[in-house]
Image (cartoon, rainbow, N blue to C red; front, top):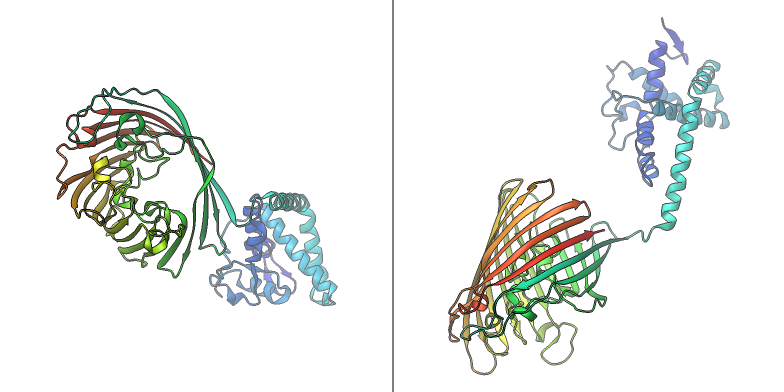
Length: 530
């Protein structure tokens, strides 16, 4: 049975109701889906656009059964809102709340027509039909209004109490229990160890708070606060090769240790300006995704990534990254100055210690990444590998100003989503620039294995093995022994915000001295993120 509705189209009453409220299902769906999400309702509603012709809908065709009814509602009442992408989505399901929201929207439009002296467009039959529908869905309309009112109140509260409209706080706290073991304190190659290694169990912490601010949505200002009291194991073992990857500090004094600003110069170019605390390993890919983080990666200092990424650490500088879309090749370049803030002679941005860095990355697939890296460093106070090799390797010329050329290759292979194999190798040549002119050659390598979801989803089992930097030749001679680094760890994901990582670090022949006893470091790290 059919009847004439608004004197326009003969369709069944069921079709009338379906068409009438489907006409506003786009707006109603947004209300229903977003009504419980604080702060999103107004944004989504603003994205809806009133259409003036049914032809504006890309998914509505003249052959559709409701085409004439939709056309009538558009031309006569202007009572249809579309999605921002120009679609109407007339075939989607309609809930009673969406039905009520559609009714309310059209009632508002009818009232507007009456108020603007265009009531002749609305017949008595129209009003009677709308009145019956309004009565039928009065409960839903009341509930919907209540939910919207509650949403507005919650949004107002959030806006009043939020920390900042541009800044997010991201924190990390590490609680660490650790102890080093061994027979004798390690000494450099050529000497004989004599002092007994005596160490106590320690409980210490490191806390970081990052403030990330964005002003355009594509830029980021980072300010990091840091405090810690994790004393280096080298104070009892005699070697920096036993250091943890997150040690430093002793008094938990809070300091601002990092300030930088990154922005997109174009879709393919990213620029990062470091005012202080510059670290190459946070600016470029280190090809060690499972272990590069100090708080959630390897336990040791050497196990996090290749020492080539420690060149020019803690200073100021500029990092440039070029990553063309859909290209497997990307390029990074950087200039870092360790004492850029110091105006005295042999310091500053260009006259003091500095590093020029370049890296070419090749990613032919999601499973395989390889990088070729070069760094040229000038150091007024030599520490060539930032305390990751033997003491002789870090300062082979007895404190003379040093220039070094560092070459590295790094790779990561993921044969499956749960297995990652990686590694690095590096070769360095160095020359003294003051005093007697001397030179030295160095070599190092490392290999990593990460097994994800081991025992439980989110857990990571890791093994790291390698040879830290060693002097292999040059006028200074070479170190007689070879140190090997072995590390086993198991990161247990307690929750999304808590991870517990027990592990053991073994240093064979520390300081590249075969006369030294092996050094062991047992560690239990608990990391909280918030």
